[in-house]
Image (cartoon, rainbow, N blue to C red; front, side):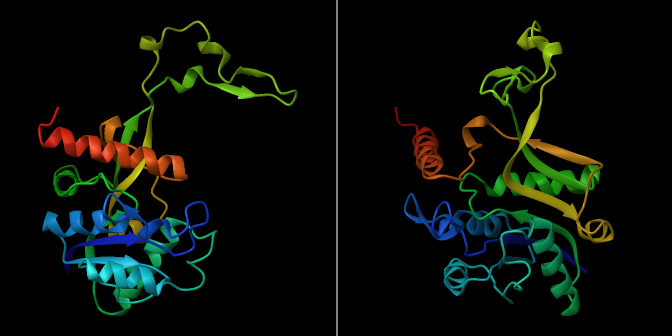
Length: 236
Protein backbone atom coordinates (compact mmCIF):
# COMPACT_ATOMS: atom_id res chain seq x y z
CA UNK A 1 0.00 0.00 0.00
CA UNK A 2 1.20 3.50 -0.83
CA UNK A 3 1.38 5.95 2.05
CA UNK A 4 0.04 9.40 1.16
CA UNK A 5 -1.57 11.10 -1.80
CA UNK A 6 -2.22 14.82 -2.21
CA UNK A 7 -5.36 15.57 -4.21
CA UNK A 8 -5.82 19.14 -5.44
CA UNK A 9 -9.33 19.60 -6.90
CA UNK A 10 -9.31 22.33 -9.56
CA UNK A 11 -12.09 22.45 -12.09
CA UNK A 12 -12.11 25.03 -14.84
CA UNK A 13 -15.61 26.48 -14.47
CA UNK A 14 -15.14 29.26 -11.92
CA UNK A 15 -17.75 31.97 -12.48
CA UNK A 16 -17.26 34.70 -9.84
CA UNK A 17 -13.51 34.89 -10.51
CA UNK A 18 -12.79 33.71 -14.09
CA UNK A 19 -10.02 31.11 -14.26
CA UNK A 20 -9.70 31.44 -10.50
CA UNK A 21 -7.58 28.32 -9.96
CA UNK A 22 -4.81 29.50 -12.30
CA UNK A 23 -5.14 33.27 -11.96
CA UNK A 24 -1.88 35.09 -11.22
CA UNK A 25 -1.44 35.54 -7.47
CA UNK A 26 1.61 37.59 -6.46
CA UNK A 27 3.63 36.40 -9.41
CA UNK A 28 2.45 32.89 -10.26
CA UNK A 29 -0.73 30.87 -10.75
CA UNK A 30 -2.45 30.48 -7.41
CA UNK A 31 -2.60 26.68 -7.75
CA UNK A 32 1.21 26.64 -7.80
CA UNK A 33 1.34 27.46 -4.09
CA UNK A 34 -0.61 24.33 -3.16
CA UNK A 35 1.42 22.13 -5.49
CA UNK A 36 4.75 23.46 -4.29
CA UNK A 37 3.83 23.16 -0.59
CA UNK A 38 2.77 19.56 -1.13
CA UNK A 39 5.95 18.65 -2.99
CA UNK A 40 8.21 20.43 -0.49
CA UNK A 41 6.59 18.60 2.44
CA UNK A 42 8.24 15.45 1.06
CA UNK A 43 5.59 13.13 2.49
CA UNK A 44 3.65 12.19 -0.66
CA UNK A 45 3.91 9.27 -3.01
CA UNK A 46 1.95 11.36 -5.48
CA UNK A 47 0.78 14.97 -5.78
CA UNK A 48 -2.07 15.05 -8.27
CA UNK A 49 -4.53 17.60 -9.62
CA UNK A 50 -8.10 16.60 -10.42
CA UNK A 51 -9.41 18.81 -13.21
CA UNK A 52 -11.58 18.93 -16.30
CA UNK A 53 -9.41 21.63 -17.91
CA UNK A 54 -6.48 21.02 -20.23
CA UNK A 55 -5.15 24.49 -19.44
CA UNK A 56 -5.17 23.80 -15.68
CA UNK A 57 -3.63 20.38 -16.28
CA UNK A 58 -0.74 21.85 -18.27
CA UNK A 59 -0.01 24.49 -15.64
CA UNK A 60 -0.27 21.93 -12.83
CA UNK A 61 2.18 19.60 -14.55
CA UNK A 62 4.60 22.46 -15.19
CA UNK A 63 4.83 22.93 -11.41
CA UNK A 64 5.41 19.23 -10.75
CA UNK A 65 1.97 17.76 -10.16
CA UNK A 66 0.59 14.77 -12.03
CA UNK A 67 -2.70 14.69 -13.92
CA UNK A 68 -3.17 11.00 -14.67
CA UNK A 69 -6.80 11.38 -15.76
CA UNK A 70 -9.44 14.04 -16.24
CA UNK A 71 -12.62 14.45 -14.23
CA UNK A 72 -15.82 12.90 -15.43
CA UNK A 73 -18.70 15.05 -16.60
CA UNK A 74 -20.57 14.23 -13.37
CA UNK A 75 -17.85 15.66 -11.12
CA UNK A 76 -17.26 18.74 -13.26
CA UNK A 77 -20.61 20.51 -12.87
CA UNK A 78 -21.75 23.07 -10.29
CA UNK A 79 -23.45 20.46 -8.13
CA UNK A 80 -20.55 18.06 -7.58
CA UNK A 81 -19.14 18.16 -4.04
CA UNK A 82 -15.52 17.89 -3.01
CA UNK A 83 -16.35 14.43 -1.60
CA UNK A 84 -17.67 13.37 -5.01
CA UNK A 85 -14.42 14.48 -6.63
CA UNK A 86 -12.23 12.74 -4.04
CA UNK A 87 -14.21 9.51 -4.27
CA UNK A 88 -13.82 9.48 -8.05
CA UNK A 89 -10.06 10.05 -7.76
CA UNK A 90 -9.60 7.29 -5.19
CA UNK A 91 -11.72 4.85 -7.18
CA UNK A 92 -9.69 5.55 -10.33
CA UNK A 93 -6.46 4.86 -8.47
CA UNK A 94 -7.84 1.63 -7.02
CA UNK A 95 -8.77 0.52 -10.55
CA UNK A 96 -5.17 1.23 -11.52
CA UNK A 97 -3.91 -0.92 -8.63
CA UNK A 98 -2.86 1.94 -6.33
CA UNK A 99 -4.10 2.10 -2.75
CA UNK A 100 -3.26 4.86 -0.30
CA UNK A 101 -3.46 5.01 3.46
CA UNK A 102 -4.01 8.75 3.85
CA UNK A 103 -5.41 11.29 1.39
CA UNK A 104 -4.74 15.01 1.75
CA UNK A 105 -7.23 17.25 -0.01
CA UNK A 106 -5.46 20.56 -0.59
CA UNK A 107 -7.45 23.33 -2.19
CA UNK A 108 -6.01 25.09 -5.25
CA UNK A 109 -6.72 28.56 -3.84
CA UNK A 110 -4.73 28.13 -0.62
CA UNK A 111 -1.63 30.31 -1.07
CA UNK A 112 -1.01 30.43 2.69
CA UNK A 113 -0.55 26.68 3.09
CA UNK A 114 2.95 25.57 4.04
CA UNK A 115 4.93 22.33 3.92
CA UNK A 116 5.19 22.54 7.71
CA UNK A 117 1.41 22.56 8.11
CA UNK A 118 1.12 19.50 5.88
CA UNK A 119 3.78 17.63 7.85
CA UNK A 120 2.07 18.56 11.13
CA UNK A 121 -1.18 17.14 9.78
CA UNK A 122 0.49 13.84 8.90
CA UNK A 123 2.03 13.60 12.38
CA UNK A 124 -1.36 14.26 13.97
CA UNK A 125 -3.03 11.58 11.82
CA UNK A 126 -0.43 9.02 12.81
CA UNK A 127 -0.40 9.90 16.51
CA UNK A 128 -4.10 10.50 17.23
CA UNK A 129 -5.68 8.46 14.42
CA UNK A 130 -8.78 10.63 13.91
CA UNK A 131 -11.16 9.99 11.03
CA UNK A 132 -10.35 13.39 9.56
CA UNK A 133 -8.30 16.53 10.17
CA UNK A 134 -9.52 19.99 9.12
CA UNK A 135 -7.80 23.39 9.23
CA UNK A 136 -9.97 25.84 11.18
CA UNK A 137 -9.89 29.36 12.61
CA UNK A 138 -11.82 30.93 15.47
CA UNK A 139 -14.65 33.29 14.50
CA UNK A 140 -13.40 36.84 14.99
CA UNK A 141 -16.75 37.90 16.49
CA UNK A 142 -19.00 35.63 18.61
CA UNK A 143 -21.53 34.16 16.16
CA UNK A 144 -23.94 33.69 19.07
CA UNK A 145 -24.42 37.48 18.95
CA UNK A 146 -25.24 37.56 15.24
CA UNK A 147 -28.27 39.17 13.61
CA UNK A 148 -30.66 37.88 10.96
CA UNK A 149 -32.78 39.97 8.59
CA UNK A 150 -36.52 39.43 8.98
CA UNK A 151 -39.15 39.46 6.23
CA UNK A 152 -39.96 43.13 6.89
CA UNK A 153 -36.33 44.14 6.37
CA UNK A 154 -35.54 44.61 10.03
CA UNK A 155 -32.86 42.80 12.01
CA UNK A 156 -33.07 40.76 15.18
CA UNK A 157 -30.77 38.54 17.20
CA UNK A 158 -30.59 35.00 15.93
CA UNK A 159 -30.03 33.71 19.46
CA UNK A 160 -32.02 35.81 21.92
CA UNK A 161 -30.63 33.90 24.90
CA UNK A 162 -27.20 35.49 24.34
CA UNK A 163 -28.32 39.14 24.09
CA UNK A 164 -26.93 40.06 27.51
CA UNK A 165 -23.99 37.63 27.54
CA UNK A 166 -20.47 38.98 27.69
CA UNK A 167 -18.37 38.02 24.67
CA UNK A 168 -15.68 36.47 26.85
CA UNK A 169 -18.27 34.18 28.45
CA UNK A 170 -19.47 32.70 25.18
CA UNK A 171 -18.21 29.39 23.85
CA UNK A 172 -15.59 29.74 21.13
CA UNK A 173 -16.80 28.66 17.70
CA UNK A 174 -14.63 27.83 14.69
CA UNK A 175 -15.00 27.57 10.94
CA UNK A 176 -13.20 25.76 8.17
CA UNK A 177 -10.57 27.85 6.35
CA UNK A 178 -10.63 25.84 3.11
CA UNK A 179 -6.97 24.87 3.05
CA UNK A 180 -6.49 21.24 4.01
CA UNK A 181 -8.45 18.09 4.81
CA UNK A 182 -6.75 14.82 5.73
CA UNK A 183 -8.47 11.47 6.11
CA UNK A 184 -7.94 7.76 6.29
CA UNK A 185 -8.82 6.47 2.81
CA UNK A 186 -10.38 3.20 3.94
CA UNK A 187 -12.64 4.99 6.42
CA UNK A 188 -13.51 7.71 3.90
CA UNK A 189 -14.59 5.17 1.28
CA UNK A 190 -16.48 3.05 3.81
CA UNK A 191 -18.54 6.13 4.73
CA UNK A 192 -18.98 7.23 1.11
CA UNK A 193 -17.06 10.41 1.78
CA UNK A 194 -19.34 11.54 4.62
CA UNK A 195 -17.25 11.83 7.79
CA UNK A 196 -19.06 13.35 10.76
CA UNK A 197 -17.26 11.97 13.83
CA UNK A 198 -13.74 12.06 15.29
CA UNK A 199 -12.68 15.12 13.30
CA UNK A 200 -9.62 16.87 14.71
CA UNK A 201 -8.79 20.54 14.12
CA UNK A 202 -5.55 22.22 13.20
CA UNK A 203 -5.89 25.82 14.35
CA UNK A 204 -4.48 28.49 12.06
CA UNK A 205 -3.93 32.20 12.56
CA UNK A 206 -6.57 34.63 11.25
CA UNK A 207 -3.74 36.22 9.27
CA UNK A 208 -3.56 33.15 7.01
CA UNK A 209 -7.31 32.48 6.91
CA UNK A 210 -8.91 34.10 3.89
CA UNK A 211 -11.85 33.07 1.73
CA UNK A 212 -11.19 33.83 -1.93
CA UNK A 213 -14.63 33.94 -3.52
CA UNK A 214 -14.76 37.48 -4.92
CA UNK A 215 -12.37 39.96 -6.51
CA UNK A 216 -12.23 41.89 -3.21
CA UNK A 217 -11.32 38.66 -1.39
CA UNK A 218 -8.54 38.16 -3.91
CA UNK A 219 -7.09 41.62 -3.38
CA UNK A 220 -7.21 41.21 0.40
CA UNK A 221 -5.51 37.81 0.17
CA UNK A 222 -2.69 39.29 -1.91
CA UNK A 223 -2.16 42.07 0.62
CA UNK A 224 -2.06 39.53 3.44
CA UNK A 225 0.43 37.42 1.50
CA UNK A 226 2.70 40.42 0.89
CA UNK A 227 2.51 41.37 4.55
CA UNK A 228 3.43 37.86 5.70
CA UNK A 229 6.41 37.80 3.33
CA UNK A 230 7.49 41.23 4.53
CA UNK A 231 7.28 40.09 8.16
CA UNK A 232 9.22 36.94 7.31
CA UNK A 233 12.04 38.99 5.82
CA UNK A 234 12.14 41.19 8.91
CA UNK A 235 11.23 44.37 7.05
CA UNK A 236 9.60 47.22 8.91
